[in-house]
Length: 232
Image (tube, rainbow, N blue to C red; front, side):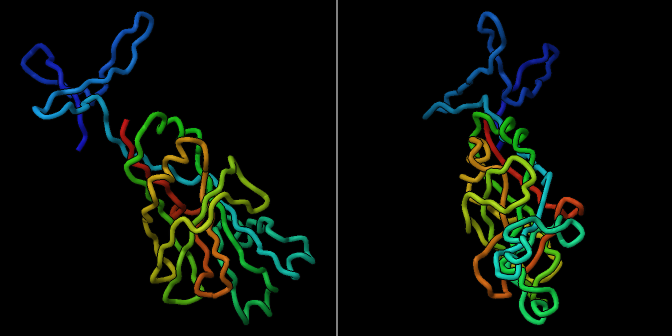
């Protein structure tokens, strides 16, 4: 429940100030901490709870590392935009695709956001919940697969795959074209707030085709979205 402060408008009505009380410190207005006695304890009413949604600003998929990719200088490098480059790939495709296309190895994807805007919004906040929307475009099997998420701290588009943490969350999908909101640990929001991470990777080290799939990127309306609920 959002806590707030109401003040009289002088005409018999009450104006909801949404907890934005400020106090003059002699040179500028500063946010005030306002508490009310409940009869048992002091309750802070000068805080508000908000939910913001941040769309992905860039996405990229990457080749894996095999003798086939190494011979072509493609190890962990970005795929061309016209060849699933704007999607986020995960896993290794199997035969007969390997015979047709070559062994691209265990592929991966990265997604980034406007991390400056996220940090600005979350400054001095408490994180209540974090969700990430990822829409699958394709899975090796018609019955879906499993997305495995990690994090990165790259401030913009990357020509080579990099990551900070792997396997922070997993989500099962039941079909090839399916969008899901994935609940993430609150520490993910805290690390965005504290400039520890700036985005996510799609990667799983298994060669099992159950994990092979790719997801819509920023070229599509079904691109990833990061939703954070916070109080401050």
